Image 1 (spheres, rainbow, N blue to C red):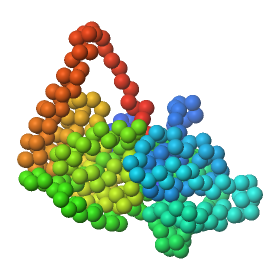
Image 2 (image 1 turned 180 degrees about the vertical axis):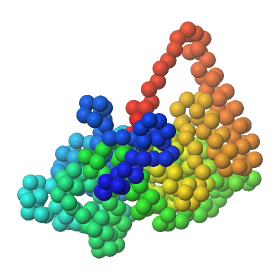
Image 3 (image 1 turned 135 degrees about the horizontal axis):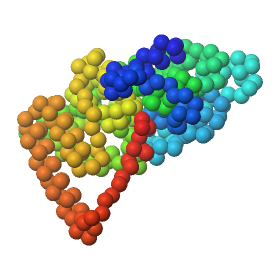
Image 4 (image 1 turned 45 degrees about the vertical axis):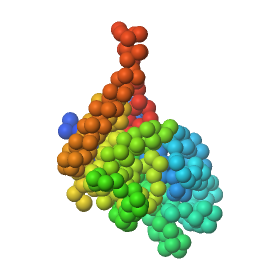
Length: 338
């Protein structure tokens, strides 16, 4: 990746960091921070797309040390759980065989699993020796008639947050907008309820947590076109441009996706959370507010009143038993952008 492209990703206009003394998410100095590299950020941001073949182009440790450590869950395909790597050796580098190994790895993935797409993640070694990831992926895509998406997030480019943005940029550049959404299934529409299409960006379905929220959205008539990327499918990511509203669940991870979808397709977005009573209620209200459907707003308030009463009743015994106690929750550990 060119230095100017990295600088553009670091300087995110929608990020509050840009309004401080520093511009964007500056590259950290040794000892100043901890966390993963850009490759780690790119991989964990897209790995939950369950039906895609994810290939790590590099030495085996890049894949082996980080594979499937998110705890994300899929309601269907399990292909994302299979670790794939080109396993570059010293001899591959010396003899210039890295690009050839990548092409054959893509061939093996396509012939063995017939995935709807293949994602190829760049790492430090092939980036340093100058492998042309874009050219190999383009040639493989044409040869195998399967989308092959390059995710150029070599570790030395920067932090995990930068890797998240590189992954999001790859989706905007190569995937989003390449397909139209499926029509509503026959018999799924309810009388008097208009269905609205929405996206959730930066929702990773850690331990299946999103499955607790989805029934609320379904009840309101909010069809989730895609959660980028928890329990997602490649065909869903392709349709994200048709959503009426985007919700940023993990704002530091893929702000660039929400901003670019607004710039290109006029899709409004907001930052929200499904952690806690107040934030969950506010997220539902924000959907209704941005969509501008008066009936949806009315039904949203009714649902919030019902669910808040239900949860407060469930919490009441504990509140009475420990009236002076406090509870601290740290959910940020499941977020790749924090």
